[in-house]
Structure formats: structure tokens, C-alpha cells
Length: 390
Image (cartoon, rainbow, N blue to C red; front, side, top):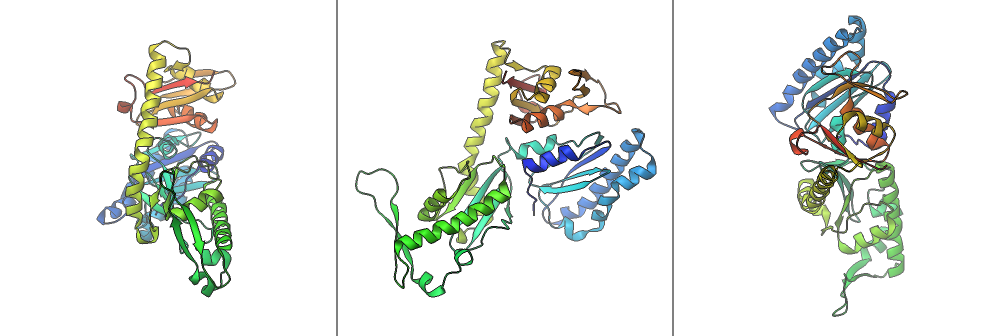
């Protein structure tokens, strides 16, 4: 089981931080004996966070109080039986958040003046975040995916079936039939959906009813995904997918689809077919981003930089178009935005921030693109590289 995490959630995390903020990341298991390791991992990470809080001058009683909201999870066996690949927890004096996510995190407990969110950024770009919408008259399924996982998401406001959406009389609906008319020889494209039936429901009415159904589904999808920028792959019978495209306003529906009735396919089967569709797209985007950065740096263009101080300032001012950033390293320092001053620290101090995290978040929130990669996957010798809008 996983939780939805959108850019709106990211913005909320950014706005929720005030003063001391604790961020905890850990890998989790979906099933088997490995689920028993979760409580112990969390206990150890809470101990690390408590020690760091006290090192930063927080009194022991306040440190304990800050971490208390999450302690009951250690004895909640049911919670550990319903996990994704990773668990992210955020605690401040005012609020507490937790997310079960389709990312396998490295263990981390960190304390700062704002939440540490860099490990979450691959949810938005380079690790292949995408959605599958499986459509049929009987069932609607939204599946949130990464390259390595897939979990169904509750659409809540959307109707679960055609009958629920239109409250059809069962008999006329059962008499409605559909088929695909073949295109004329030599004509390009797919055949058109044809509708025929009896009992008072004609072809035009049938299509209108399906259109209304999918418009209601699309409303539920928009409510759930809001400002998502992840690709959406449709799964279903051809004529239904054609009508859904007509009804939908989601901007990133891919042309390629998973054809056939999805009612007969498991989540795992749909995910496997979807990865074959979307995988090359993500790989191409990443390769092109790295190639463009290397080309600009190689030509000594002022559009590109790997200078940490310049990157932090440009990110804060919304000038970064695309940022490459290491997820498995921290660049400690301090940024004073009013003075446009960046100070680098060889070791973390009480007031230190991870400047890589800071730059990545500001880039994302100003509409830029972030490719969060392990250092070994980035161009040689950099922890961050960017090209600028201006």
C-alpha cells in the first residue's frame, strides 16, 4: 500500500517547516519476515534523530516530545504489513507527516530548520513515475507506478462503473453492443467505434452515456492528480480509450496504450506492459538532459554551471531550467537569500543546510526540471550541474 505524494504535498512540506524539523527515511518491505525489521529500523532512526536534536541544543524533554507522535508505529503490526518500498516521516513542533512510497530509501535521520526532501524528488522525474488508468464499463482502476513498483490509488470522487455513473436501467444496458468498424482499404488510422442496440438506447445515446461516464471519471482523476506532470498510460478496449481521450483534459496521456479488457489483467501484468511503453521515454529524457549539460559545459557557455554557490542563488531566483543533482551526497552550507550569500561548510554545523536539497526544491517549485541521480550517474566530478533560463 502506498500513499499519493504530489507537488502540492511537497509545497506543504516546504511551508510546514519552522524551526527544528526532523526528516526520517527508511526502506520497508511489503511482505514476509522482512516486515518485522521495520519497527527496529525506526527505533534506531528515532534514537539517531534524538541525539542530533540534543547536539543542536534542543533539551532532552523537548526532543522526546517532538518524536513522540511516531513512536506508536513501532508497536503497530498492521501498519508494517501495508507498506511500499520506503517510508518517509517528517516531524516539526507544529505538524507530523508520514508517507509510504514506491521508492527504496537509504536509511537517514536528519535535523534542520526545514524538512529534507531531496530523496523524494525522483518521484517527479527520473525514476519513471507514471500512472496507468485501466478503463472498462465495469471498473475503473488508477495505478501509481515507478519503474519497480505499482499500487492502486483510490480515485474517491470518480464513479466506479458505468452503471454507478448513469444509474442505467439494467435491461437496456445489457442489450447495448459495440464493435469496431474496419477502415477502408488504404485508409490510415484505427477503425471507428460503432454502437448498435435495441430497447430504446441508440448509437448516439450510447456514446453520449459513455462520454458522460468518462467525464465524471476525468473529474475524479483531476481531483486526485491535480498538478501532476507524470505520464498517463491508458489500458482498455480501443473504442473506450478513444472516447476517454475525447472526455479527458489530462495533458500527458501517452499515445501508446495497453489494449484489451483490463478487468482480466492483474496490477502486476498492467505494470509490466506499461514499463515497456514508458521506460524508453524516461531513459531518453535523462540521456538528453545529461548530454545537453555536457555540451554547454564543454563549450564554456555561461548558460551552464556546476558552481554550488551560483546554483543555489539561481535556484532561489527561479533561473534554473534543468538541474542535475546527487541524491547520495550532501553539500553542507548556509544560504542567506537577502544578501545573496552562500557559505560552504566542510562539515555539517548546527546551522548547516544541505545546499543540494535546497537548490533542488527551489528549482522544482519554480517550474524547473530536476534529475536526482546517484553521484556515479552524473557527469564526472560534480554533485550538481545546471543550465539556466537567463
